[in-house]
Image 1 (cartoon, rainbow, N blue to C red):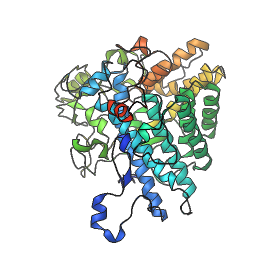
Image 2: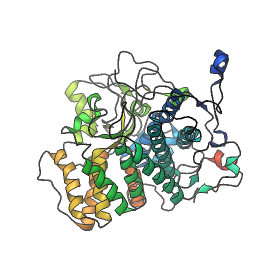
Image 3: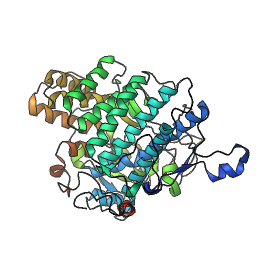
Image 4: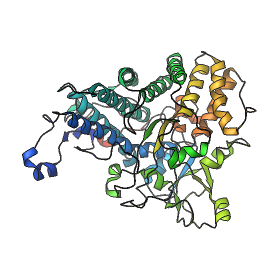
Length: 494
C-alpha cells in the first residue's frame, strides 16, 4: 500500500472562526495524564513538529468539497443527486440562488480556516527548538497556509487575516476583513519563502516541493492579472524539467497515475480508515468521488454512488473530434451499459454522463466505513498540463510571448490528439480564446472552470443565473457575520 503522509489528526478544532482554538483532545489527557500537555508547551521535540505538520496537511482532505462544489457552480455540470432537495446547499449553488444561510458554503469557510489555524499554530512556535529538517517543515507549512488562504480568497474575497498567531475568541469583533490584495500579498510572501527552502524532490510521498510552491505562486499571480510575474515563475518551473506530460492521458486518473511525473501537487486519500456522514471532514477518503458515482450501479470496474456532479451536454460538446481526452473525462453511461451489460438507476437532472476522472472504482479489500465516502482516489490539485496552460495564458495575456504561449498550448494538444496537426498558431485575442477552450476540456471535472470564468470576466455570459457584481464570490456564512457584531460587512448583494 502506498505510503501516506497525513493519516492522522492530533488536534481538535471548534470549526467556527469565532472559536478556532486548539488543544489536545480531552480523551488524550484523560487516558494519559502522565504525558499531559497543552497547546502552549507542546513543541518540545522534532516529533512534535512532525505531528503538527501532519495536522496541517490533514485538512487538505476536506478540500473535496471545494472541488466538487466548484465544478457544480460552473457550466460544466449540474448538481444532480436523488432529488431537488438532495444536499440543498449544492442545489442552490448550481442554480446561483445561494444565500449566507448555506451550510455547505459554511463548510468551505470553516474547514479552510481550520487549515490556516493549524498552520498558524505551527508557525507561532516554529522557533522553540532547532533540529534537522526544521526549515523544510516551515516551508511546507508556509505552502499549506498559502493554499488554504488561496482557497478562502477565491471563494469569499476579503477575509480576516492573521499570520503566525492563532485566531482566538474575540478576534471576530476586532480583526477586519483584509482586502483581497493584502491576502494575496501574504500568499505571495509565504510562497516566495517556501520556494527558497523546499526540496525539488519530496522526502515522503505527498509532501510539497519547490515546484508545487512555484506553481501555486504563478497561479496566485495569474488570478491577480499579474501576467508578467506569473509568466516568469511558470517559465522557470517549466525550464527546470522536473515534470512531464505522461503519454497516456487515461493513466493520470487511475491508481497507477497517482503521484506521477505530471503531478505537481496532489492531495492524498486512502480508503482504509473509514468515514461517516457525521464528520465528513474527518474522512481520509475522497468524499467527492462517491458523490459523483453512478446511482444504483451494478457492473464491472466502477461502484455505485450518489449521482451528483453530472456533466452537461454543452461541456461534452466542447471536445473537438479526435480528442482522446473525451472518453477519459466523460463516462457515457448508456453506451457503457450497452457495451458491458452494467445496470444503473437515474437520479435528479440525469444527463447520461458522469465525471469519469473522479468516479468510484473498486476499493481495496481493507476499505472501512461507509464505502461511498472512503474512496482512495487522490486529487491532482495541480497538474503539469495545468501549469503549461497557465503559462500559456500568462505569456499571451501579458503580451510577454505568444510564441511561448503557442508552444505550451500545443504540447497539451499533441498529447490530446496524438499528432502535431492540431498545434495552435493563433495570436492575440484568438490565442486567448484557444487557451480558454483548452483549459476547459483538459481540466474538466477537476474544479477549476468556475474560477477561470470568474477571473477572466466570462462567468455572467456562461453560467445561467450568475449575477455580475454578486456571484464572483460567495457569501460569508451568516453566523460569522453575526459573531462579528458589525465588524464585518457581508459581500455585496447578499
